[in-house]
Image: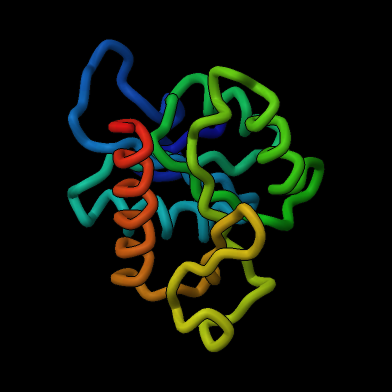
Length: 151
């Protein structure tokens, strides 16, 4: 697996047997630099345990291994698009409740005001988002998930 938690060379991506109270965020993007930037931004906020997967075909295995509280998912990836990953997750009863925030270059900051927006049943965020806007979008998604879990 190409999971990363502390940089691109950290192979395991997580520490087995170590419980954390921080929400787990998994970034899935075929661009290693962007995946690491998003992962680092979230980890540096010190509110999250953040991971990155840069091989789209390994995405489902990474989700199963990590069991993230939220997935940041690139839309356009070779081999398996973000839409295909989302469809596979939705078809798996053990993974279908994990919220997905699509991160895409198909929208600009001007289109969304650097904030997440909804199109259909999915939320989107521009790839070149400001760190505070990224963290704000993640917080909103996690809060919404907690509300659903409480109900």
